[in-house]
Length: 388
Ligand code: NAP
Image 1 (tube, rainbow, N blue to C red):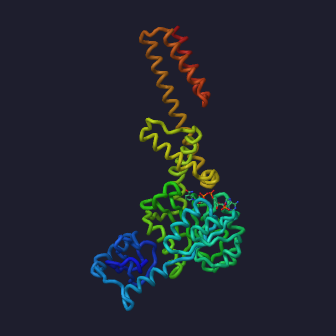
Image 2: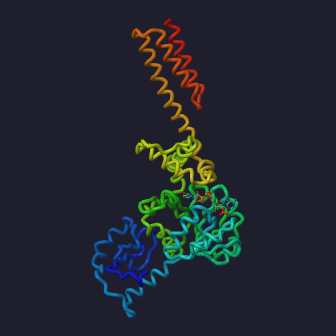
């Protein structure tokens, strides 16, 4: 990269910035003509350095020469930042991530049960059908992109003894407490553990990852080179502009049950209605169609995993059901009040009966006809009969 694009400014700063790695002063921000930033995410603890660092800014660096140590240092630094990443589960999401990781210059290996050699080759990814061969390539990072429900068996049967003892294990599962506990249970203590959830997918992230949330917890990360490797891995997402959010896996699952599980449930529910675009779509309706597209494109395994492997999801499903019932009660209750008002304000008995019959017809012809509607009709009829 540095060969084709000349830096116009270099900022020096401790390599600590956001993910907790202590390093000597190093060039960390290179302002290229197309304004690429190596480390765009910074945490507050670095702000105290910023006034000193401003004095170290170099503007308008000349074209790089062979004896130009600064540009050599940057080049070396970039090369040393590259990782060998082994993706386990090269399905929909694994492939989606691989595209960007390859684009950044990292080496990507992939292992799946399904033969995905052809698609991997097109993307510049080295595909392995055999888990032993895959591990013997000694990736720096193993990135689990398997379905939530298969991850337990995938990890338990994985030949971890063939990996380097210092390997970093990371995952992208959409639930977080489950893989965290599984990693701690199954992986040897020499391995580092990083739990992550890129909170976007092939649909929502198809035009780029800028501003999209990336949640992570450093569950077990060693010091020195291990911490730096973790930082370099996280930086793949930071460089793409993701909003990096460090939080515990438990906290993630609490929030995700409300946000993500609700979104997927509503999307899948609407999907069952086979909604179609109309010539008079409102913005709200367009959003609903978009939710259907974003959620129904994912595998059902993924949705089931969101439910089964997040202990907060059952309660959320019940809350959704209660909310729907409450809303229906509110609608029918209002009708009840109107009929009552009309009855006592001189509307004829015949008219009131007609309204109730009309409501009953709607209720009977509705595919989701249920007992609470039937109950309301009975109550309304009783009122009319009482007055009669
Ligand atoms: P998925 O259906 O959740 O997972 C598909 C992957 O799981 C495939 O690679 C598949 O292997 C593997 N798999 C399924 N059953 C398996 C089994 N019994 N043994 C071994 N491997 C098995 O779909 P996905 O969208 O690709 O998601 C992958 C992971 O990314 C999930 O954990 C999901 O929670 C997470 N994630 C997805 C999104 C998204 O938007 N899609 C976003 C964030 C995180 P084969 O390759 O052999 O078919």
